[in-house]
Image (cartoon, rainbow, N blue to C red; front, side):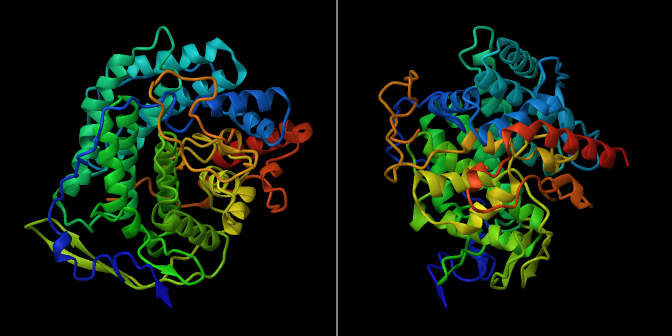
Length: 481
């Protein structure tokens, strides 16, 4: 009962051919056409829509904006604490929490500026980003340094993209930081996988690196880097390319997410990162959401159903592990891991809105997951550990959309990178990666479980403040305990 298996059953089964480093191919047609700005997770049209909807008091945008303004990172009083060297991984003086907290503060302040129009928040975001680009020189640690490069690289680029036109922003210095500190580690990981056999690392490792490479290419106007990321998404030999992350598609339309055989937290992380890659590519006129008959939709639906407590099939998967020329072994995942239906990450609004609102496709499990998680918060709302900062979040505010009259495909990037009033010319207008916390509190679900009118299920404006206050008080008690 299997179809469109892509790579067959078990990426690691007989994977000798995959056990060597693989260079990223650069397509011959990687042209120098200008890229769109802003054009990472948010276009000019997206930012204008958020501001207009919040100003008009429209739901669920107001509830999403209330989540943003209540977050301690989204305050104009935030002060950066830049470091020359950031360490992530055992055996080192880890200080990477300083980096991800500051990046999320920069992103949240920048987003708050675009919605409210208040310059103080833009100034704060610029000060944070300038402080880091003026001091950070390298990332160190165990293999986890590749996670730091991937996760915080794509996040830094997204925060910087929102203030790239600010008069005080050090654009060239930000470009140098991405190209010289974050991108080299991510590019190296996709090419050599830390000198391990290519199946040694689960999909989220590849996807973090891929998000950084793509975001760097877009922010730095490096078309060839963008094309390399797109090529890897489609044909990369690591487990994060789409046909390896989703190796089997069943007759019912669900696509197995291979990391569901590991644990729920990492499966959610992987889906969020692949969604982030797809959204950034879409905003440059590249449709990865729809690639291979919308394979990502099938995988995201699978994880959403499973995370909601539904039964899903799983094909036993054996993957090879070890270092090239060193120790070796194998590991088999024979069934999906146990799930906690209360666990979530702020990943669903972006994906559900794309498929159901932009494209007009049915996606019942995605809409249920999005409704349950709404209104989505961001870094700092899902606990203090790194897993709560893997996604930038605030999808209820940022990605809720009116349903398109006609399903649309991404428009080609315009001839000029100068932002037009509507952004992109389109008809409409997410060792181990950030391990899941030992308790469920850090990734606890928020919001309504209603399905009908899921986009409006983020909350009623009149009571949003009270709900947020109760939630913050409860969160404070749990973290204090």
